Length: 93
Image 1 (cartoon, rainbow, N blue to C red):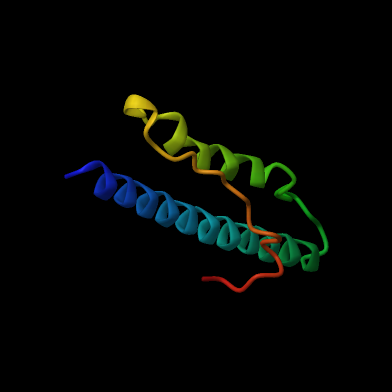
Image 2 (image 1 turned 90 degrees about the vertical axis):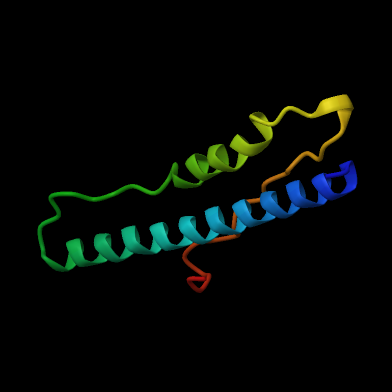
């Protein structure tokens, strides 16, 4: 495989990983939000799951590919992750 095809495949893989992680973050945030709402409706909250640091965990997952890629001869793209704007306002993908 030549460098052009390899770069294209790498970029495609990075974009697929980003979409998967974004979708998972949104689903997870909604699941936690739904649980917390149910918990409040029970009248006594024994367990409440905080979501303040959730996006940071997904940022680390997205950084994984770039941080663990050996770019030979300076060739390769930097995958710049942008988290979904708000997991609670987006539809589950």
